[in-house]
Image (tube, rainbow, N blue to C red; front, side, top):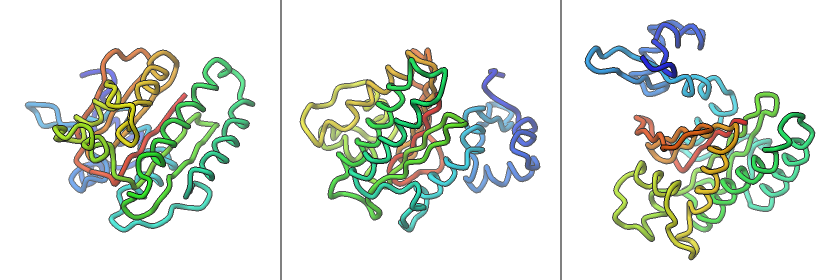
Length: 241
């Protein structure tokens, strides 16, 4: 078994629930397991468990997954680009006070700004229901969460690449290819910068759009993209540094 996979017993102990509870969560889609062929045994990624245990992440994920669009809590809600830029400036000032991250501090701010601005730039006038983004961070845990209930990457990229057939295909293209320099088709071009910044520095990135999710760690040469059973509205990402 790969070192980044845990048995259902190990996962249950880490999360603090019973094995039966994890099985129920897997069946309901609340917290999905990985089944290893041919035994059918359930295993869990360490990265998935870390995300699940993050309160900020769960708040944002619940918001993205909700069928009915409602505004998130005011301390995390950026209804406009101006509000996001103001909060990004506050984040910048707070991050600058943390010792030991001087070499990557400006890159973290740039990554957050790139992903957040993408949501506004490429959903303008086309929000599904609730405009704006969820922007929360826990500097003690060195984690940032961004989410939106927009169109998602697939629908946006299909304007320039109509042959794209799945969220996974669109996610791969957005992190690896230059699509177009013309707005709004330029969705995702900045994600190539995000990928390089994460790979070249001590960071981790999780990104989900629709039913496709990406895990990216420092030093990764290839993209790790998987299909998940629980789709979301728009996009969500977690940045750890």
